[in-house]
Length: 232
Image (cartoon, rainbow, N blue to C red):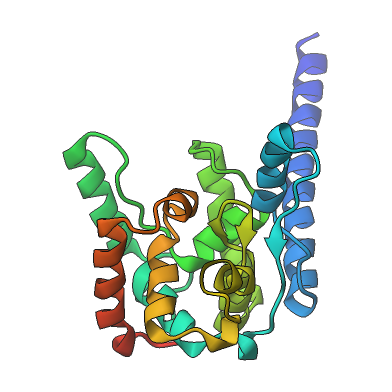
């Protein structure tokens, strides 16, 4: 009897390992495919659309893909200056930023800062949810490594700029530029780019409160940092 139980325990363990590996291969298959083809959307976009449909069944997202070369260099610099100053240096994780965020959150007694890189944010937005759980963070780390070792930095930034949320139902640089400034992503000025970058941590909030004093201060800070930002 004991031998029988032991045999089935090992079978269940091997089955569980196989399922986990198959799950990771599903992610990696998408990562490889999207190295060459543009994703039509993301997990965050699907979740947001479902939420919008609860109030307005015919709601649609504002989103239009634009290639890397048709996105203002000002916006690329602004996003790196605001979100991930070491983007070209790290391999997916900025451990100094993570440590600083941990210390700040510990001091405040709640989560007030994050140390996620652009690569980590992209992994989360493409595949996962906004829930803060140990499982989600672990899966985010695995996908981040997949992205970093399969794509180059230019591709990571290109997809990131095309799929992140920038307002209520607004996704990607082109839709954001038109939503806020009536311009194309290619035609954004330095100040406009800095303002969009300042909105990234809480885009729906700033979509409703565009005259926020904090947003104005944050825009000026990013604008001052942009000249030092290195872009792929």
